[in-house]
Length: 103
Image (cartoon, rainbow, N blue to C red; front, side, top):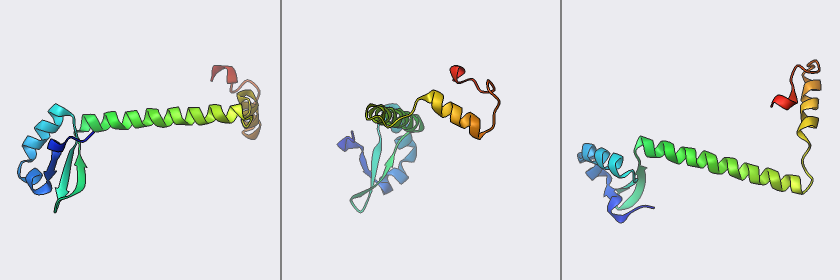
């Protein structure tokens, strides 16, 4: 959530960059920077940004799993063993070269 006290003019940010960086690191909250009164940029410390990316990755993975489970419920999927066998045949791997039980 963006807090109203974290909305600043870009020119203020430019004049006080070091103080902004200290505050961003301490609060771990983003700051909205405005140009002519309109929000133009969001600034976030690197640790918080990495955390945000990791959370997004997890959410995307969970959404993919959810879609996959729904697809299986509709009977649209194939057993993994069948897929592995098909890949084995396409790659012309000898039996046992790629053991599906170890994946």
